[in-house]
Length: 222
Picture 1 (cartoon, one colour):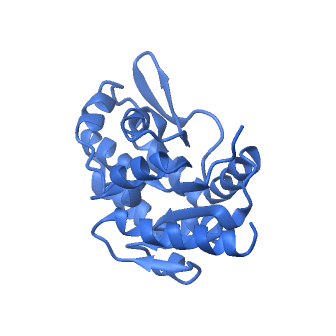
Picture 2 (picture 1 turned 90 degrees about the horizontal axis):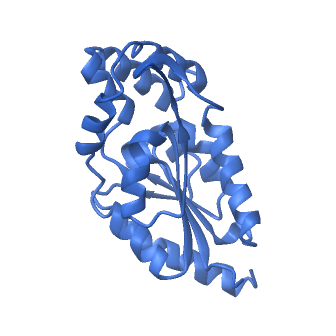
Picture 3 (picture 1 turned 135 degrees about the vertical axis):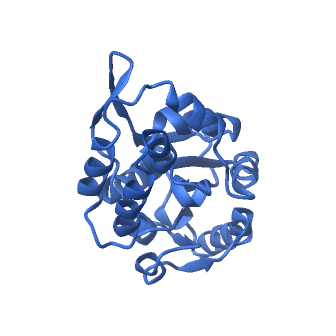
């Protein structure tokens, strides 16, 4: 197998998407403001992510799973997000979305953008309703970093050929581990550790930075 040119890995909520998926779901439960306040605290690094996720998901207990179809239909990708992933795919990159959001909502859009891998949380659902709990291991900052390292190893890529993009404190470890870590319209906690910052509005602005990172890796013999 010919190794790919590089690995592009990105957060989803407020990075690949303009929205926070759990807040869209919470709107249908009438608790969007409460959920948004907890999300904001977590993204600024003021609250442990796993704890914050449990608190937010608990507020959704009893919500009909059909709401997830409505949320999927109302996703708004960040300008240039799908273009960036399609371009990376066309140029031989492996691509991945890693999210503290939910795979039930994200995966269909990821397929449209030819994303190679999706790692995200799952809602626990019983009798057609959300139980107020997640199903399986939580995708937190540590798991995002581990996913980056595992995919790089799987495809035989040095970390110098990896690019990670995020916006919040939960992306810090992943962004620090990547050959190039990009803070996109980010919170101060992530800006402090990123190699580059983008203010948008288009995520496609990351493409020249990705090409420069590849050139640097090749010059260093990586």
